[in-house]
Length: 158
Image (cartoon, rainbow, N blue to C red; front, top):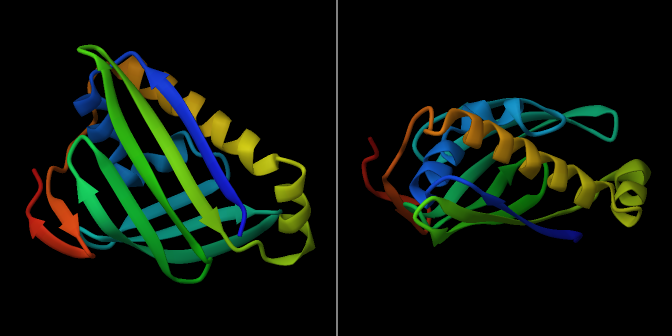
């Protein structure tokens, strides 16, 4: 399975970066190829994206989420993908967002794209656009501060 790990430093506090990231339905604003993300409940998401020139849909479950620290997910049907996003405070008004994910390439186009580094470039671009979005706003468009452990929601968000 290909693995991508990329980071970006953003000029906002870690809570702002985290809170904006939890607004999953806004992912199409900064993630290339993502057409729609629907939040089905506190721990389940339905994705639609264009990958390798073809539309794909899948569902993912958040398996671990700790406010202002990390969000981990695993696909439950469709595309075979999993990953982790971490949030690290660097100063009162600066933080680092690191995305690490892996997936099972399907077909020749995805396999070649992975080998040629298309996935690395796409994630770099997504993180740059996230940086631009969150810095231009200065505040998150929403927040969810619940915790999820092992896929179980242990406290409700805001």
